[in-house]
Length: 109
Image 1 (cartoon, helix red, strand yellow):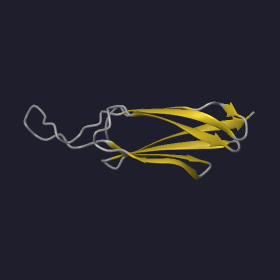
Image 2 (cartoon, helix red, strand yellow; image 1 turned 90 degrees about the vertical axis):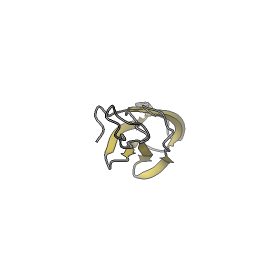
Image 3 (tube, helix red, strand yellow; image 1 turned 30 degrees about the vertical axis):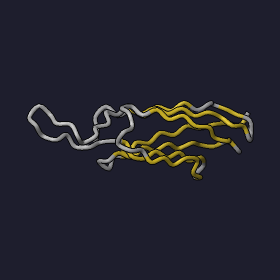
Image 4 (spheres, rainbow, N blue to C red; image 1 turned 90 degrees about the horizontal axis):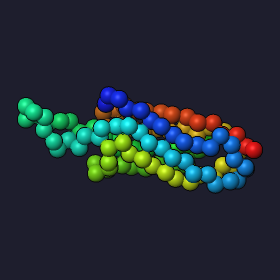
């Protein structure tokens, strides 16, 4: 597991039914490509966030595969339609098998 990994998500607290909202996510992660060497000449193992998913009340909103060229601390922004009150669940998958999750509730105004 990479150290210091922290997911952050920005979702409005409420929206009208059927409204399109913008969701912003950022995960603090060092993103090591597996091509660099440490001071002793050993290859530093690859450690990247390789997949990101977002679900709303159990239904998929977005599912993204991230490649090795993704930057450190990947930022993703996307739009989603809110049909009802519920919970967005965000999941980031790391090469080392670690899974980072965050959830945000949204109410209908």
